[in-house]
Length: 412
Image (cartoon, rainbow, N blue to C red; front, side):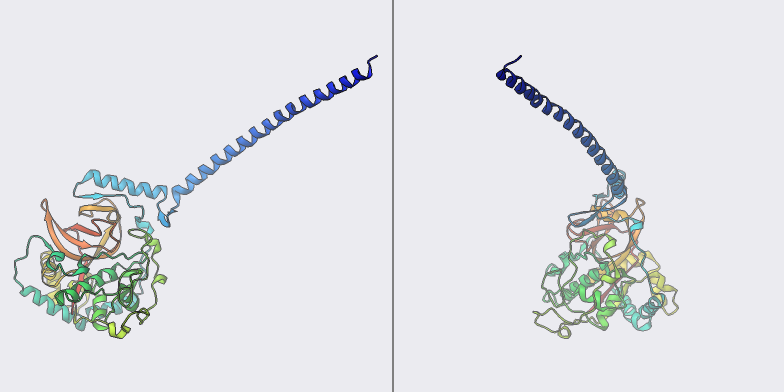
């Protein structure tokens, strides 16, 4: 029979065994739970990754506030860039993450009644009188035109010649290019004394027949408005230059995706200058004395009231090219509009040609300020309105064989 102290020892041993064995069982149980949870989390993450990959392949995303391409769109554009650079050496393409595809661009909805009203205004005898007079003047100029010409060098004192605008999240290329041409011609007419910027904002918002953030129809519209109603001054976004600076911030790419363009985004016309400007709106208005086609939209020739002279001149390419050169050489830059293709957005440098690499996406207007020749290829020199980060510091050289649809200008 054990003694008291021996019994206490056995009890302690039994308790000791329980204490030692129990944690071991608990640790084994916790280990099994952790393994199951880890496997579950792993499978969940794999499922999420697959779902995310599928989504990214078919949906665009956002990077630093800019719309980025989906996987499929990026592949489409990168393949295009690689093909362009592999198959020709006239110009270099660089992948642009903001580039649009043909199916990204919504068709420009046009009110038929307003369209024909606008065309009646632009082909009326009153509207074409300036065109006829000016073209006769151009035909009478017999100066020898140089092989290369750059308006920036002919009129070096005009600061607007070198300025590259950024139309930002609005399809206002027509207003930006027209306003830039107007600014240049004001400087030229004053022999460099008037260094002002015509307001893109005022032209965009206060010309009801011109267009809006979804674009415009004809290049002559802003110049007719310039002549008949006048336009105030105004600089770039947040510039505090002139009466009405531009209101769209350049924060959505070069160019911005057409998904940013919306007719409802076009600001309402306000005939007031910014509060701290020294003039009233009416005091700041500037008007042109003439508004004319340099190259008329050929679709307008269906109308009977267009003079035979215009028909003869504009339906022959050799006349068109010669007249455009004479116009720029003697009077300064003009606005020119054309159809651009998907690859145009990826232009980096060189002599661009539309070729057959992609689909047409939309009409686009730019400032045409010269011409030249490189390695036997003749080109037009343009200033675009997609900021300085695009192309050759905002400029582009385009093969002269690429068609200009229509071009216009005006004189003070």
